[in-house]
Length: 209
Image: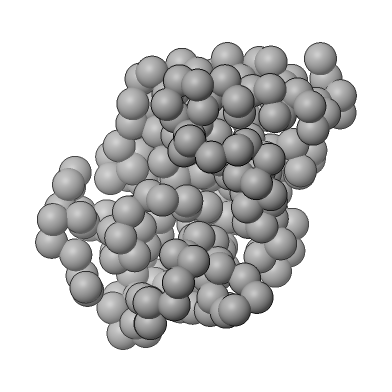
């Protein structure tokens, strides 16, 4: 199957398998696909490269790979079982030539020269708290690159304060609103060589709460 032939039915079939393996939530798959497509509406330009942080069962990464047939991408996850599934899914959907799957912690992968500062876009769905998500994502972004994060359905106030974000080289470009539960951040400054901190520290000692 070539990438052009990966249909909506193919995608739903693969993601239904992911749900059966416990890699997606228990709800119906089509609404989860629709939510994943929301990530594609947020960037200010179509990315040439993207990384899906904590890709899990492939949302939004697989959906974005099908949506953007000219983009290259990396699906990053720390669990071998999920990575094995994602590799099979990429083969089934005809994505293997331009989408790679990496089994590693984000805190480690973000210091890999092959991945650091390489991506136009990073996406995060249920990866972690805002501070940990921003810290783990920052090192993957090129200058001017963008980070899209899904937000809770309820309004929980300002989760992305400007000052600590600036310390990661990031700024909020578009905040979540009643019409869209995503936030768009942009890399606007340098990212320190020690960002992210070692494995587990961004979550255990967040830069803000």
